Length: 627
Ligand code: ADP
Image (cartoon, rainbow, N blue to C red; front, top):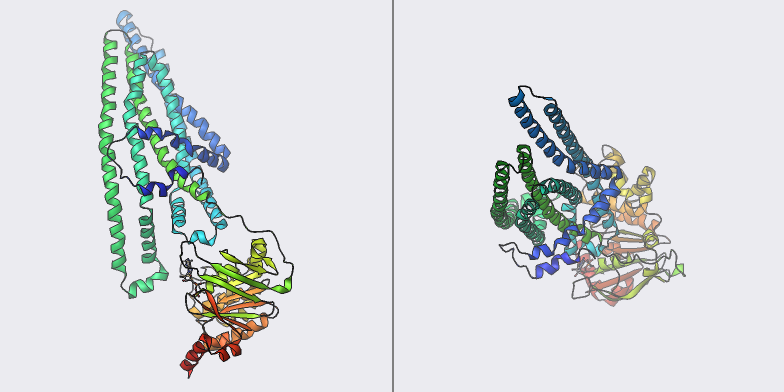
C-alpha cells in the first residue's frame, strides 16, 4: 500500500485530465518512479532462481562490451588492408598475415556475441515460467488471507483482476529491461571512450539527440497506463460478458432468453470505445515518435559529414572513419534502446504498482488465540448484535439477542432479505458485528482463534459451492481432514441419503462432476443439496451446525428422511436452521421470526401459534397450500 500510493487510481481518476498532445518536462520529474519497483522485481527474480540471475548479470556484462570490441577490430582490419595495399603498390609484396588475423578475431568476437545473446534469451525463457508461477502463487496466497468483505468490494476486486491479468509477466519484463539498460549503458560507455578520441562533442551530440524521443516515450507510457486504469471497470465487464457467453452454467439461460446477440452487442460496444481511445493514443505516440526520430537522423548525418570531412583532411585514418561512423550508428541505436528500456520500465513499474497495491492490502489482525471458552455449557449467545454492510445505509441486522445451548435447535424464519443469512455469517465470523457481541462458551468470538472457531462451526449455505471435483471430494470439502477419505464419504453420504444415487454413478464416489472436465457428470438440484448436506455430516468435529435452506430442492420424502437423520446427529450439538418449510421449522426448540433485521417474535411452535402473529399467519398460509 505504501509504495503504490502515489499511483493510486482513485486519486488520479478524480481529475481525469485526458492525455494531452505534447510531451512535457513534468515527465522527467517522475523519473524516480521508473526505478521504484525495479528493486522489488530484482528481489523477486533473485528469490526465484539465484543461478539464473547470476548468469543473466554476467552475460549482460559480456554483451555490453563485445560490440565496441568488434567495432575496434573492424577499424584495425580496414587500416591493415589500407597498409597492405600501400605496401603492395610500393614494393609489389603485401603481408596478408595481420589482415587475416584481425578478420579471424572479428569472426570469433561476433560468434561470442551471438552465443551471449542466445544465453540471455535462454535464461529469460527459463525465468519466465518460474517467475510467472511464483507471482501467481503470491497473488493466490494473499487471496487466502483476505476477508469476505474484500471479495464483495468492487474496487478491491478491480485490484485483484488487474494484478492477476498483467503483473505475472511484468516482473520479468522489468528485470530484463533493467539488465538491457545496463547492457546498453556499458556499450555506450565503451563507445564513448572510443568516440571521445575523435571528439568529446561527438559523444555529447550522440546523447542529446536521443533525449526528445525519450521524453515523449515516457509521457506516452504514462498515458497508456492511466487509460488502462480508467477503463478497468469496462475491461472487467468485458471479461464478465465473455464468461456469460462462453460458459456452460450460463448457456441455458443465454439460449432460452435469446440473450446472446444483446450481450455480444454490449461486448462489441465496449471494445469500440476502448479501441477508439487506444487508436488516438497510438497515432499520437507514433506521430511524435516519427518527428522526434528525425532529430536523431539529422544528428547522425551531421556527425557522418563531420567524420568524413576529417578523414578527407587526413585527421583520421580510413579505418578510424569506418569505426567512428559505426560507433555513432550503434551508439545511437544503444541510446534509443536505453530510452525505450527506460520508458518500458516506467510502464512495467506502473503495472507492478498494481501488484504491490494488491499484495499490500491491509488485512485485519486475525482474531484472538483462545481455543476454548470459560463456560462450555453456555453455547452461542447473541447480545444486542447489529450489523451494517460496508457501504450500506440501513443495518441488515439490528439488536438481535438470543441464546442457543448445546443440544438445542433454533430455526430462523423470515422473508427474503430479512437478515437470516447475515446472522449466520456473523456467527461464522465471516463478518464482525458493528454493535453488540457474540459469544461462544462465554467468550467473545473476537477472542477465539479463527481456526478453533471454524472447526466448531459447520455451515452449509444456500448457495453452497459446487466443485468440479469427484463426488466424494465434494463431500470431503466439508472437513479438510477427511477430504480424501472414502470410508467417511460413504458414511456421510449414507446419513444425507445421497448414497443410493452416488452408488449408481459410473465410478461411484470417484465420478468426476462438472462439465469442465472429461466425463464430468451433472447432478440435479436436489442431488446437489444432498451432497451439501453430506458435508455437514462429514464434519463430525463441529458442534454448531448451520443449515441455510438445506432441503428446498429436495422432494418431501427425502426431506423427512434427512431430518430424521439430522435429529440423531444433532444430539448434544447446536443446530441452526433456516427454512421456509414449516414442517421442518416446527420441530425446532426455539423459533425466531425475523423481520427487517430484527426479532419480531420468538418461542416454540405452540407458543407462536397461540400468539397468532406473523408466524401463525405464515404457517396457516402454507398449510392452506397443502389442503
Ligand atoms: P436473508 O438470508 O434473510 O434472505 P440476508 O441476510 O441475505 O437475508 O440479507 C439481509 C439484507 O442485507 C438484505 O437487504 C440484503 O440486500 C443485504 N445484503 C446481503 N448480503 C449483502 C452483501 N454482501 N453486501 C451488502 N448487502 C448485503
